[in-house]
Image (tube, rainbow, N blue to C red; front, side, top):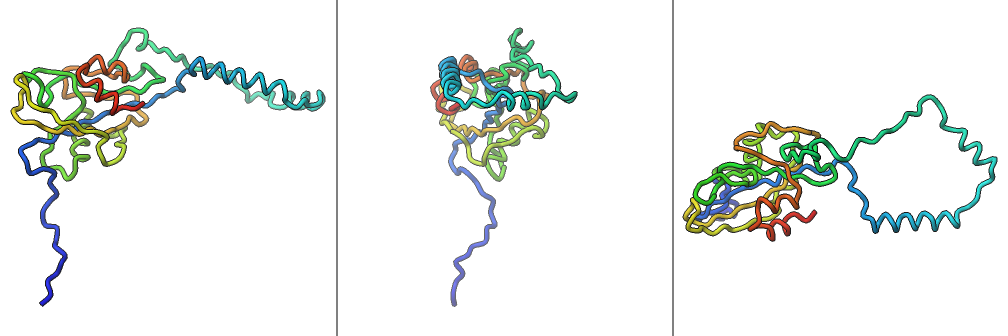
Length: 228
């Protein structure tokens, strides 16, 4: 009698059988909404290239240029006034607003209780959740962000795999007695300028450079994880 080599999948997937806990953290970012300013060196090169091309460009007859200038002078033309790059939130350094640092990426940080925080005291951290019974760690990360925002409308998770992970060893002042692994997932703001953020005492939207003020001990790890 032949035995089948196919075994039915009757059990749900699990990620760890050890005593280590898994934590899903979300790097929730807002992409730049205006074009970043050009570096002075790049601008100088572009200006030089333009002037160089002007010297050797083809000279068109004057009657041809007169006809081309006459076109496009209808009533449909409007005056374009660009919006200011520096907002009121920039001037007041309001880090709770998304209307700041428009040419930079912003990242959401929360202040409150976090897993493994020293002494169980409130600390700055990313949206997070301890893995329980979710099908995947990505689902766990979605639950973490949804618990903070209320729903996931206006968000987009980039891929199913984590962008980085770290192993946190217990110390004398930490609230956990065993090491745990923290997995970071990236999510982005989509077509939204404001969120009703809860489940925390405070929150900020900060650039990568400003983030290092909140995590000085993890600055090397964060610099490697956040490339842009």
